[in-house]
Structures are given as structure tokens and as C-alpha cells.
Length: 331
Image 1 (cartoon, rainbow, N blue to C red):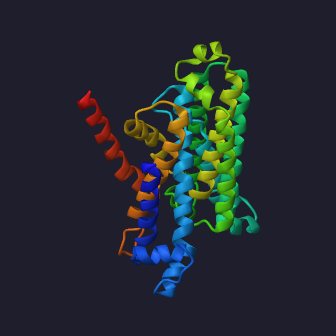
Image 2 (image 1 turned 90 degrees about the vertical axis):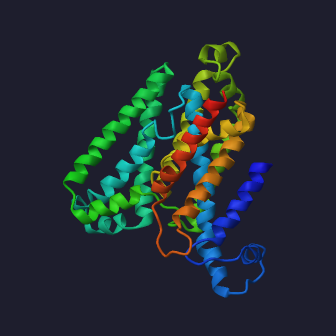
Image 3 (image 1 turned 60 degrees about the vertical axis):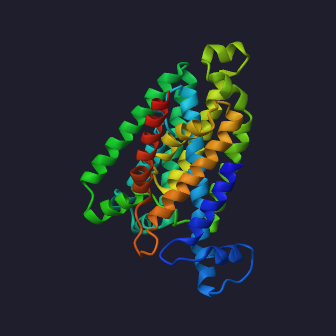
């Protein structure tokens, strides 16, 4: 309940602050269908800030859930949504389109500079890597081996991207680097609808494996002794993480920190390992942190905007470090 109220507060703050400051009263009036005192405020809120806020909530929740799933599956606190190499696959898809565009025809050159083209390329790249990981998972029984293979996929794709970057002209390299900064403001309602539908689909699948996830906390052998179908649980976990990470990276770029840190931060706050409680708490906490990061990135009262990927780590990492040190001191 407290986290839910906190989320509403930060939604209002996010919609209010920016290059143009809008009073909370006018924000509430716009959201409830009333006309604010200035017509331009209604346009700013509904056509720019509200889509960005909804994107921040979906991205923050999706990455946080993915991070928690990976940490539970691999029983590794350093595991995050990108350990399977899916984000690297999305980055490779974008790199092949943007950096390797000179190898293609003129029609693909135009596609490389469109948001939809970049999203399609990233989706294809992440889907291919996810398919490869799933094929490997069918042959490998050891969960830790899947983790290592995912990291190898990430290293392999990073090497290809480095080669493409080395031979690419400066303007294409700059476009790719800008994509890696991450962005929440490039999505329209159509793209947000796709992101939202896939997010709800993954949540529906996730509900079916909450009990097995709780069993995995005590080890795979214990989970099997309780009758857990380990193969099904592992495959569903990989699919959910792959879909969430892939579509978020495709639409918003590779956003760091959130998936790795939010599960730890949430556990420090609510002090439970029960996924029935932890999953919604992690989702809301991730959404809150993403909204805070976006608000900071907007640099209120300034016309400049910071890269969201830099803000999530620059301001978020010290907070988590402080909380962990404080917890250790109390223990």
C-alpha cells in the first residue's frame, strides 16, 4: 500500500517537473479530464510527459522483475536481466542495421534512421539470442552452465559490435552510441500498447510459477523433492526474462542498474523472500526508481536532458551501496 501511494506521488512529480514546471493542481485537472489554466500544459502532459511516464513504469517494472527472476533461478546476487546475452543480441541487431547500413540498399538506409527500424532490428537480435539460449537450455541440465553460456553470447556479440564500430563512419557510430544511452521519450501510444501487452502476458505466465520460484530458493534438489517441474520452471523463467528484456531494450535501449539493484533494494525494504509479495513490490520499486531517474534526467527548469542510462547508475548505485553498508553496520 505504501509503495503504491509512493508510486502515485512520483508519477505526479514526474508529470509536473521538466523544462516547463506545471503545478500539481493543473496536472490533476488534466488527468481527470478538466482543462488546466493553460492549454499548452494539457498538450505537454498528455502528448509528451504521460507517455514517457507510462514507459518509465513499464521499463522499470519489467527490468526489475527480470532481475529478480535471474537472481532466483541462478541463486546469484550478481545476476541481472542482461546475463543471458539478450540485451547484447538486441544491441547487435541495432549495430548491424546502423553501423552496417552502408552494406545495404538505400531503402534500408532510411529504415536505419527510424525508431521503428531500430526497434525491429533490436527485437530480431534479442529473439535470435533467446532462441539460441533456449536450445542450449534443452541440452544442459546445470543451471549455472546456462548462465556462463549467456555471458559467452554477450561477449561474442560485443566482439562483433566492436568490429562493426571500428569500420563505421563517425556519424553512424554516433547514432549507435546515442541509442545505447537509452531513452524513454521516443515511444508513441502504439509502441507503448505493444510493450504493455507483452508485459501483461509475461505477468500472466509469471503467476503460474510463483510457488516453484519460492522452492528454488532452497536449491534445485529441494525443489525437485517437492514435485517442482524444474525444466518447465526454468524454461518459463528464461522465456519471461527474454521477452521482457528484449522488448524493453528494443524500444528504450539498454538501460543499466535497475534490473540488478532493485531486487536487492526491495529486499532491504520489505525483508521477505516470498515471491508472492516480493514480485509486486519489486515491480513497483523499479517503476518508482525509473520515474525518479527520468525526473532527474529531465533537469527541471532546464532545456537539456541527460541520458537515462547514465542517470540510473550515476544516482542509483551510490544509494544502493549506502543501504548495503548501513544494513551490514546494523547487523
